[in-house]
Length: 365
Image (cartoon, rainbow, N blue to C red; front, top):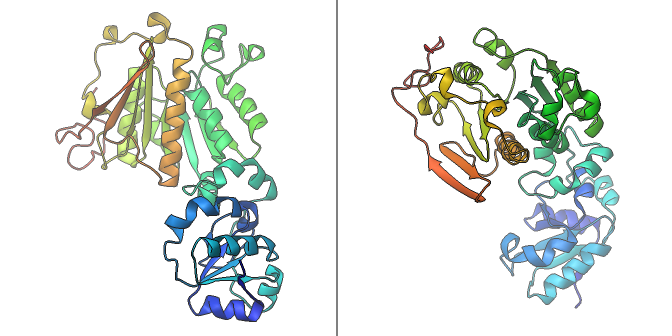
C-alpha cells in the first residue's frame, strides 16, 4: 500500500505542527539519541503495540528510523491496518539533525558495553535507559554475605546496581557452601566480604563493592547505614535485626527483610513512615532460647536462594519506583508444599520505634 514519503524539511514541519513521531529503531539506537517526545516502538513490536500506543486511526503519525527503510515498512503496515494519517520520513536521521530538527541525547548515556550487558532489561518499559542509570547510580547495603546475601548480591550486581556495600564479620566455613553460593571451596577461611567482593568483580566490572568486615550492632548501625538508598537484611540473629530496624527508622532508609527456617521463608519490605517496621510485628526481642539459628534448626540449601532472589527483586523495584512492593505485606513460603501466602501488616500506632514521630533514640530491648 502506498504511503506518503516526505523529505527532512517537511518532516520537521509535521513534527512541529503536532504529528506524533514514532521511532521504530532498536533500543540501542534509541538510547544513543532521539527526537524529543517521540514514541519508541521497535519495528518488531509494532503489531502488538498499535492498539494501546496509537489508538487513534485518524491522527497524524510521522514514522522514522535511521534511513527510512524500516519506517517505510512500518508505515505500510499501519496503512494496511486502517491508519489514514501515516507519513514516512524517508531521509537520514543525520540529515534531520543537520537541518536543525529537535534532538536530545541522554545526559549520562550508557556505554555500548552497558547497552549490550543490560539489553534484556533496557527493553522493559519500567526500566529503559533512565531506569538503568538509576540502578547504576544506586547504593544498596547488604547486611550479611551468607545464605540470603549471596543471591541478593549476585542478582543486584548482574542487574547493574552500581554500589554494593557488604557487611559481614565472618569467614567462609565449609558448612556455608551448601547455601552461600557466592563463595567457593577455595574461599574457605577467607573473609566473607573479601570472597564476595572477588565474585562480584568477576561478574560485573560496573559494580563498586564497599567492604565492611564488621558486625552491625546498636553502636555502629547509624554509621553503617549512612548514605545508602536501600538495605537488605540478610542477618541471622535477633540483636542485629532490632539494631538495624531502629537505625533504619531513624534514618528513613528502606529495609528489605528476609529470613529462613528449615523449609520456610518470609520476605517483606519496611519503608519507614510509609508502612510498618520490624518492631510493629515484634515490639521487643524475645528470649534468646526461643530463637533457633540455622546452625541448630537446619535449612534447605535452596531456600535462601528463593528468598534472597525475592529480596533482590524488591530492592530493584524500590530503586526504579516500579510495581508494587511488599510494604504492608508479609510473603511466606513453604517449600515442602510449595505454597506462598500473604499476610497483611499494619503499622502499630504504639510501636516503640515508629509509632507517632520516630524516636531519636533506640527503644529498649
